[in-house]
Figure 1 (tube, one colour):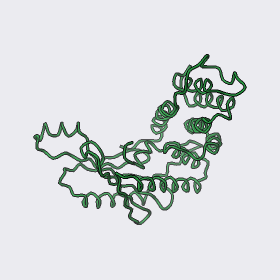
Figure 2 (cartoon, one colour; figure 1 turned 30 degrees about the vertical axis):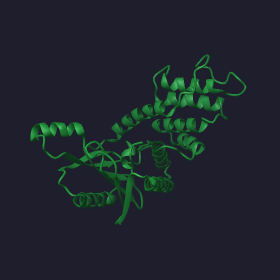
Figure 3 (cartoon, helix red, strand yellow; figure 1 turned 30 degrees about the horizontal axis):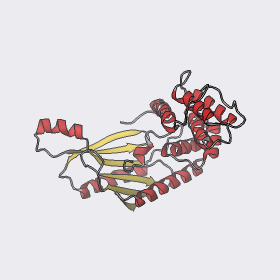
Figure 4 (cartoon, helix red, strand yellow; figure 1 turned 180 degrees about the vertical axis):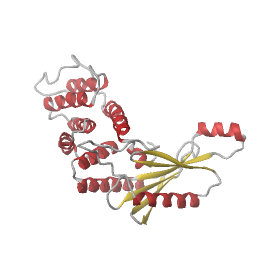
Length: 288
């Protein structure tokens, strides 16, 4: 499934709205939830008021609305410890509103960014600002941090192979149910311009239940081999459990080398910002 730019923007705004609800932390509700800065120093009451405006918007929760109520909080409470989080939300709202200048201004105040989604939004804003060299430098650092974190994880084995055009990482999950979790991921990272792409070998318990209804209870579970790109996902193949890891690795590396020859870059037109969909699928890891 490849997604066109218009749908990417629609899905991106939906994902952003979900993000604003998930990223804020409930810190208390006191007094009037819509009054900022009534005291000389901002308190948890002001933080709670801002959060209420995000979680229970008083008008349509457009990116412009999220940006306005968040920058109001930033202006009123510049010394609160939550300001970096607020700067991140304001930056992402500006990205969803195709305003690279405002987005980059807030991102610079929020650095270092703490989530993969915000880091990918930052890269997209840099691309829209025609600062591609810095954008891909940020991508390189994000991928390096992702790989270093996985190397320290007890339930993950990470291998990397240098190929023409970049690097292919193989991520093995050591302690997960193969019927419900990915057993292995392959991640392509470019030497030059381009977003990462990932091939996953996974399975789904519900789909396997339907498969066994048709093929018999002793049927081997099906594994889905999917290519995840910045702009969408495509199923490459289905395989039963008899497919060896060596066969899957060869297929994945061949497919990702073809991707590296023509990677997704996702420059927007006329100032439009095109962030990648679902960055957690492009740089995957074990569940928390």
